[in-house]
Image (cartoon, rainbow, N blue to C red):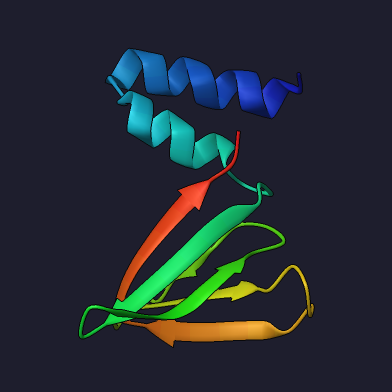
Length: 84
């Protein structure tokens, strides 16, 4: 484990990071399953090839789709589940 990761873990433990915060930190590079709905209907059900990023100025997300390698940008009611 690199020094920087050890340092981040130590800082989080000292400052009281939650397990969710730690999970978010260690999800970098991990594949995610993304399901988005509108009006109760699924309009997107796909996998990312890595981290899903959130837009700072909207409710949107962007990621690279695993199957097509396309950059996908989406906003709305989305569930993002990272694989361990």
